[in-house]
Amino acid sequence: MSDLLIYGGKPLNGSVRVSGAKNSVLKMMAASILTKEPCILRNVPNLIDVQRMLELLVDLGTNAKWLEPGTLYLHNPNGISTYGSERLMREMRASILILGPLLARSHKAHVFYPGGCAIGPRPIDLHLKGLEALGASIEKEQGGVLYLYSDGRLKGARIYLDFPSVGATENLMMAAVLAEGRTIIENVAREPEVVELQRFLNTLGANVHGAGTDTIVVEGVEFGQLKGADYTVIPDRIEAGTFLIAGAITGGNVKVYGARADHNEALLYKLHEAGVNLNIGPNFIEVAKGPKARFTPLRIRTMPYPGFPTDLHPQMTALLALADGTSLITETVFPDRFKYVHELIRLGANISVEGECAIVKGVPKLKGAKVEATDLRGGAALVVAALAASGDSTVQKLEHLDRGYENLTEKLLSLGALVERYN
Ligand code: UD1
Image (cartoon, rainbow, N blue to C red):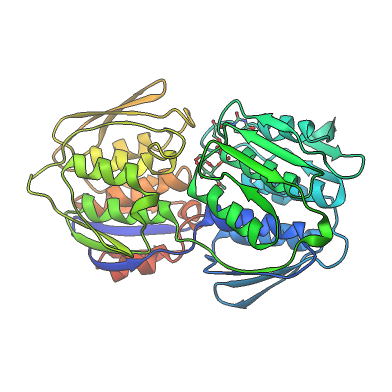
């Protein structure tokens, strides 16, 4: 178990570069199953989730290696096993993304329900309903095993998602790439990572369009038609947002290279409303202290993209804990995502949770304390809050953050933070 010691109350200053997007690269790794030609992925962050996905693919028979730090080579020239590892699938929700590609390529897949998650139940009914519409039969076996199979190629279909789930959109897009005929998926997720997946699939030779709108159309191609790819992963918008909030909450001046305004509009709008100064450049976003001594309280409602991202709500709660008045944060995507609030309260925040709303009564100061990361983004909120708190804090269970933040300690040190990691 790892701890981060933070000597807080010091403004962050300087510049930092964000790593490649976790939520983008994991899907491209899964998509590499669709082709027998090699895929090279660049700007790949070295994160626990990436390592787990790599292990899962290697276990299926993928020939995989790091060509150099940040550059991953994945190749599936021969048949691929259709049995997903129970341990790895239970450890990581995103492992379910191998389902669509396995079914598309091998016409069968044995997978496990992805394990429970610290931010609440995460069903996969939309993935399964969509795959059934594409012609898959599903057998639910004992012990959470799912066996999906189709009689030859999947068949193009019209699918409507009850909710614009990111994972379901991506799984169905990948499955449809090798289906016979046209698939139309409506009410899809519009996240930048979905657009990137479309771009990656089309680089392989797939015929997908519409990503970024609410309807995606996939014209199926034959397995042998797909090529390889050499592809660079986009910067991580959630990591970028976390550093912008860290700069703002400490009253510092932080320039985040790789942060894209077009991927972070909801956050930038809210930071501006809170009174943070923003400078948006072609390849960076910079935050600086605004004219007011304290942040303006806000109302935030998380929504599928382009709404305010659920993955930045905890960090924003930390910032609003210091606002001059009461803020209301409504979590509509993962309504159970408030476990971290108890820990923020230990740092001196005044927050109560009622159903899917957090009522945040701003306080003038946070105080250092020993706190425990409850999940990836909740943990990020604690780090951000502890950087602003006066006195020393320890954030325990830092390994949650290793799932999504590459070289976090080093990046914070480069911004002048006084932090030490103990493994
Ligand atoms: C992805 C991101 C995660 C982000 C989330 C929402 C990855 C690896 N993870 O997760 O960081 O917080 O999008 O932006 O990309 N749902 C169902 N049935 C389903 C699928 C989803 O009810 O079959 C529900 C979920 O329980 C949740 C909501 O839909 O309440 C959103 O989930 P979804 O968009 O699927 O998130 P993920 O793809 O798991």
